[in-house]
Amino acid sequence: MKEKKRRYYRFYVLCTLCSLFILSLLTSSQSNVNKPVKQGQQYKDGNLLFPFNVSYPQLAIPVNISDYMIQIAKIKSSSPSLYLKNEHIYKAIDDWINRSLGTDEFSKVGLKSYEMSGQDGYGNVHMTGYYTPIIKARHELTTDFKYPIYKMPVSEGKQLPNREQIYNGILANKGLEIAYSNSLIDNFIMEVQGSAYVDFEDDLPLVFFSYGGKNGHGYSSIGRLLVEQGEIEKEKMSIQAIKDWAKNKSEEKIKELLVQNHSFVFFEPKYNTEVKGAANVPLIANASIASDKSLIPMGSVVLVDVPLLDSDGQYRGRRENRLMVALDVGGAIKGQHFDLYLGVGDQPGKLAGYYNHYGRAWLLKP
Image 1 (cartoon, rainbow, N blue to C red):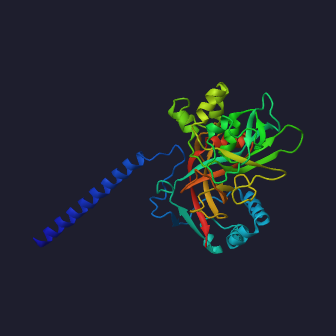
Image 2: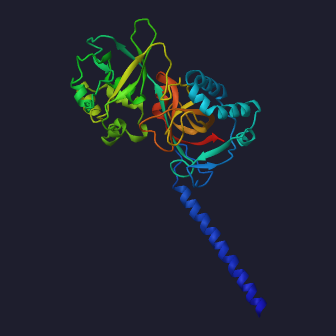
Image 3: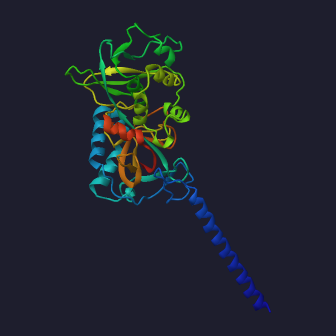
């Protein structure tokens, strides 16, 4: 009788475990159905409990080793103090490269890889792109080149004017104009990117206009406003889409949109210089990022699994691994979010406009 009860109990326990297992599979399958993947999201590492999680990634060797090494050389020559602060990490990664080790072998050179939890806790770090535009301009006001680019005014402790006030001429004729472009949209995109090369079309080298400050008013996304107004479909939103929208619009209509963003950026001309980020270090395309420096200290090295986009801006499953250095910041770059620096000119600009995807990332440190 006791043996019969024991058999029944074992059968009952087995059935219960089987039921729980099946239920967990069904629940898991159902939850996976609701997890988006169109923007490159992955869920292979499960839920990550901390902002940074010790992990040993099984990835292919980074494709940008030479660009990464150039970027480190730029840090060493442009910011010796930043290089010295991170020298032990840079030298350890050099050792890792020279020994042809795998991505799961950073411990052999005294480093650990800490996987970022991502915005969803599953390792999906938000990735956008930025670039350096090239815009045409003149030194003096002309009929076609009539949209001023300003240097930073002296505030004397007072609130600087908002965008609408600036468009209405409150800063005019005060010696603040440093160039005139032929496109309000080009000026605005330069503000969004934080810098630009300016071509005065005078057979002289391009002039780099670096970020010179802003007016301190709140920022509103023009892309979001255009989507909300039904002017551009959300899935098709990009910098190029904004440019295309503006082509057939009057100056009044364009200003009507732009003044809804009260923030305004000022610039500083610099001659014979390279594109630099907040760390004052020249940026190498595909080897540097803008990040939240409270999370990723300036000069840090991150192994990034980047989703690749086709020429039409679509993600179709291709990815590559890069070693990237945090050398810039951005007002909209907060938390588990990277802005990938993609280079100079129209082609990087087109690609940057498409990027609103997700990849994985590992911070490398002792």
